[in-house]
Structures are given as C-alpha cells and as structure tokens.
Amino acid sequence: MAKSKFIQIESKNALLELLKEGREFERIYAVGRAFKDEKTREIFQLAGKNRVPVVKVSRKALQRRLRSSAAESIVGMMYSQNDWSLKELLDTIYKEGKQPFFLLLDDLKYTQNIAAIMRTAFAVGVNGIIINPQKKSIISDETIRISMGAAERVPLVEMKLFEALKILKENDIKTYAVHMEGGNYYEQDLKGPIAFVLGAEDVGISTGVLERVDGSVSIPMREGIGSLNVSSTAAVLVYEKLRQEVSDN
Image (cartoon, rainbow, N blue to C red; front, side, top):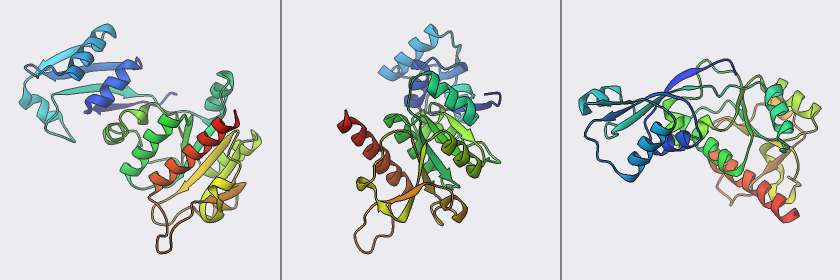
C-alpha cells in the first residue's frame, strides 16, 4: 500500500468512525469556541487518546478550508493509504480466514453512487472493491463524507478488470455480472466466494467484461422500469448473498 493521498475529513460522523478505528491523522482543526456537542466531545477525547494534535482556529479561518459545507466546526486532516494490490488483498483475506467477497465497478461515473456503494459494502462485509485504474483518486473528501468514512475502510484495488477477473477465476471465486438478461438474483446460488460486477450508470457493463464472467444475475422489474440506481442494485445483491449465507447456517 505504497500510494497515499492527503484528504480532508469534513464530516463529524466520518471523523469519529475513523478515529475509533485508530486511523492516523496529521491534525484536527476546530473552531476555538465551537459548541461541544456529544460528537465533538468524543472526537476530542479520541484525538487525545490517539495523540492527534487539535489546533484551535477562528471560524473564518476554518471556513476558508471547508470545501463541502460552511457549517462544520471541526475538520480532520489525514493520509489515505487505501490502495491494495489484488494479490496482497487475497493473501490478507485468506490469512484472516475470511471468504472473498468483492464488488467490481465497471467505470461508474458519479461520486454519490460510488460512495453509497462503499457504505453498503462496508456494512455488509464486502472485503474488496475493484475498479479500473483512475486518473484521479477515487478516495476524496466527497467520497469519505458521503460514505461516512467507509471509502477509507473498504479495501480498494485499482487494476484492469479483465486482469482482475482472470485472477478471481484462478482463485475459484465466482463472478457474476448484473445484467438484465441474467437469471433472477434470488434463484441463484450466491453462497461462497463471489464477486459482483456493476456497470456504469449510462451504458452498463462493457461487452468485454460480460464475456469474461461466469454468469449474470438480474433484479426483476415492473414493466416500464429499466433498472434500479446502481447503488440500490448493489445493496439488493449483497444483502441477498448475506441472507443466503445466514439461512444456510
């Protein structure tokens, strides 16, 4: 995980969750006379425990730093190190005795959808998100804020999806594309090591990727509705897998 990116956490919820997890922050900026609500007090306590410097600044100085909201009274500065190779991630998963569970995002375009998928993925226990190499880091202030910190907590792999699918198959991990011509998702066996491929909001999954997966699944729709939002689709599928795993035990 050599690559790192400096990011600014402007959500108290995300900041709190990352501090609880013991993530390293360079510093935290807080308005000197900020109202000490319960979350702010807890952030200060965890910062002290984790030896994170808290710098008191004026509201005007803090507002000059803010990018998403002028209302925040506290901001955390940290380095993202969420950058894995697939081999490294698989080794870690197997070493921890876990079952590989991945989402592959085929050129999704909207940050809000990507962040929502990350949040659901972390909640369910997805242990890796794989995307094509990006010109700009997918881990940003915005994805951190919308995902409530999950963007930094779900392992992220950037590599060509063709290559990723090849490695997944070599590791006996089933790969399913979410496609309208696939079988009904609740009729498929989704137990065991698995990876779901989700397509771009406008064009869906590329033909090359469709040719390389083990199969396709679909979500039944009423007539007149072509598809769900991609983040909703991801939620339906990962929770169906969780339901099948639980009911099988």
